[in-house]
Length: 125
Image 1 (spheres, rainbow, N blue to C red):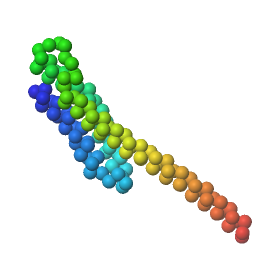
Image 2 (image 1 turned 90 degrees about the vertical axis):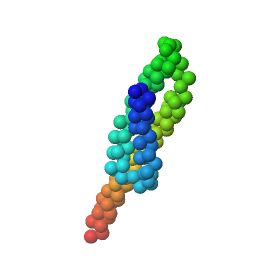
Image 3 (image 1 turned 180 degrees about the vertical axis):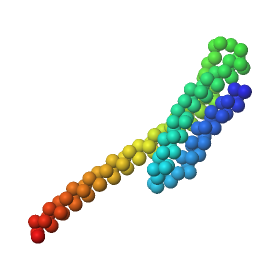
Image 4 (image 1 turned 120 degrees about the vertical axis):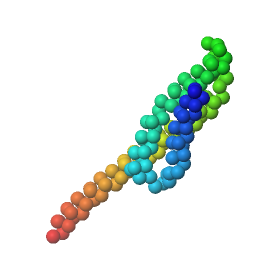
């Protein structure tokens, strides 16, 4: 049962990784950003859940309270996957913030230029 639960938890992160791999990083829509954010929230607790499952498996196998997680290569591999996927999500969400700031700056500059053009036109009339 615990192996199955560990597999289910791991598959959540793997599905997010597959989704991220399918994206065109240079052409992300607001829907893409919303999905990235939603998927990141969905996997936030997966590392803790996976670790608990692995501890249960090790305890069942060893029949000992002294369980060393360094004896669990699956946990190390999963940690790498988890941190890689969450870092990619965070990086992509940072692109959205940067894009929003850049487009806001452009709008502001255009608005200022439009006001200047109107003043110049009014002076010329």
